[in-house]
Length: 162
Image (cartoon, rainbow, N blue to C red; front, side):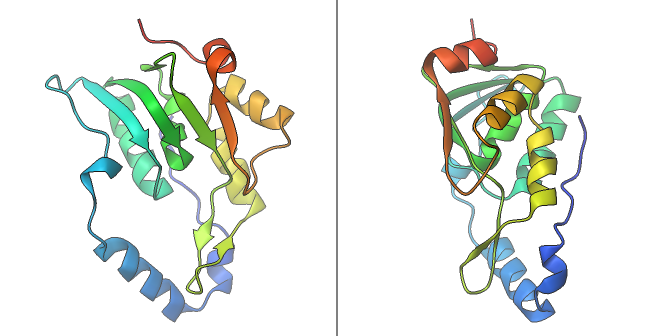
């Protein structure tokens, strides 16, 4: 499932200067170690724990790399926002006590407001396994509100780690 995130039409409506500033702020901010899934001794295994998400393109790139390399991904603890894109990996499993938090992707504008785009949200939703897509649809789709998946629902929809 090697996909690149489409650029939402909202980018066309935002002034170039604001985009440049946003890109500079995003690219120049220091990356905290807790934002990246740590590798455990074995490079064929990644442990994702307490990950709040981040830039969609970064998570898609990692997902594509791990899919290509057949890296086993274990989701433990909390996985939110773009982190949930890892659920599409064929080698992914979740710990029984994991919590997944979903919402529609957004673009942070220069004035710190969040802009949403229906086409981008539809693309984002299609990145999930069918069972997750149906679960999201049954709850009205992705919006700015959080949808939380845990417990028995999590066990029913995703593979639990051995």
